[in-house]
Amino acid sequence: MLLDAIGGRGAIFVGGKGGVGKTTVAAMLAVTLAERGERVRLVSTDPAHNLGHLFDRTVGDGPTTLGAGLLAQLTSSKRVLVL
Image 1 (cartoon, rainbow, N blue to C red):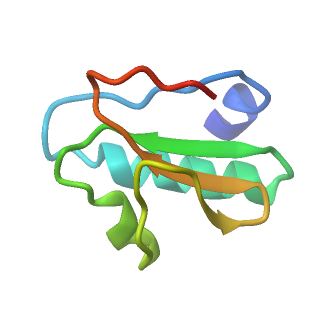
Image 2 (image 1 turned 180 degrees about the vertical axis):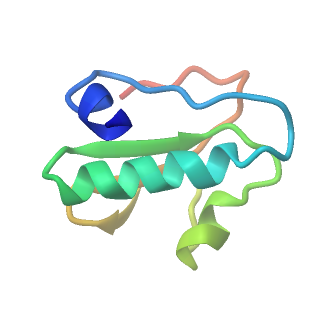
Image 3 (image 1 turned 60 degrees about the vertical axis):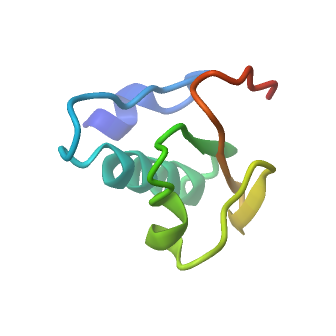
């Protein structure tokens, strides 16, 4: 139900307090939407850089291809991101 409501949107933000699973939820949404044919760029501003650990890949400042239609990227919350 949630995925049907958010598909096709220009941007989706996942937020909350520390330790509540924001990165995990964002990654799950990104993978599922990409599997449904959406083009997705998953961007994390988490200074702990846990995004790469979820995908067992190095994810850095530039876009990293994780699969068909799915890119991931780390950035600072103080840096402007141009998509």
